Image (cartoon, rainbow, N blue to C red; front, side):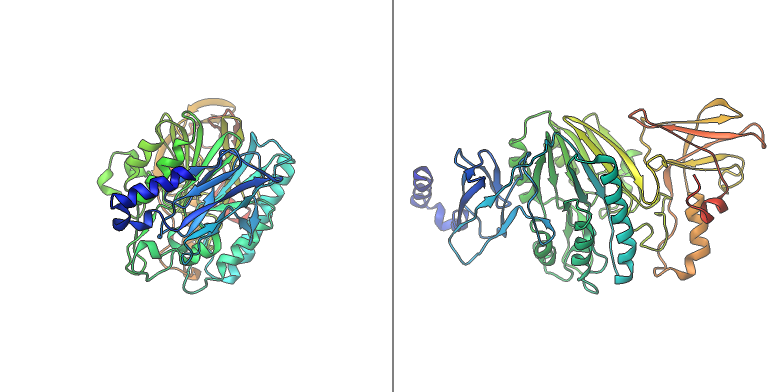
Length: 496
């Protein structure tokens, strides 16, 4: 306390206070407490400055007149406090008061969270109330799956943005979506998407009023087990109707630099952001073709801050499923949309079924798999018989939605392994056929099937041969299936 006052006096004596008095006021202080005792070493921030609590759980922040919240990095080993159906790790600042005290109360967990699970979903954007029952079915699937598979292992959730469809037409969907996911009994953390921002504001800084009212800060961090989680706000509103770009503002990068300084190098770090950092165009070297609204444009600086860690980036936004191995320490998962084709089809534009990704954390180790809604995790690809794909009429084709370069896709003819299938870019036959048949009933005329890079093909020797496909993921899990006609996949989605 004495050092802080001396520092303020020195700055005022040198004239700094007259230039930027907001650097010191309002003053924020308080404690982080559990079972009546202070918790040492907890990171506390106002979104600008990061400090740690002392041995008695005390903290002090100089504050900033632009700050809206004071919040903590939830430490591992403690329960996630919930309020208004979302994690409550923040307090709203009263800008009229110069000195404010905020205490945070934590409850120790009765379970070791070194081993835990995270369920990640992206883009449920609910436009209309009649779409909520479909979201409820997805939530029921999540709850049933984790309860049956993980028992007493701690489970958490993350939503990679676009919680709502149209913030002007139906803002009440924020509360409705929160309510549905809250009742999965999984505490969900949220990132802000472009659909979640207030429209018509004069600047990016004023575009998160409604989002903040529901979820608090747009960027923050928390710890579970040995994993450090970071939620970033990568959507930058341009102040002109609905226009935006993918961008991390300097104040957020400065905060992130301070946040990571408290994380030991080499640690596993998981970053959640709505807009992906990478793209198919970047993977093929066609950087000039990247759309600025589809990637975080200053990603190189983010990567630089993350270079000392083992990083998994989780994103959404594109409504298709894709994985990028960016560097030895950097892997990005772009999650398919929870709404499929904007609630108009049971698949996304790339043919990925509606579903979510489950991440299993065990100490420093991270593994994952895609979980289709209404199906077992063994359903990891859809195979089409020869003659069912107009682009490759002679070929057996397969869509492996969670593919990355470590996967192996083999095919068998009459029991004989014929080798690996060849990857190509094309349109998934089932979503293509569905769109052709149902387009007239779609609410939106701009949606449809999209090219994907996780398709594979092989040409059988005999038209009447028995064909089987086998896919092995990077963790050694083997999935097997037989090809079917498009009509069969359309008429009976339960047939695997």
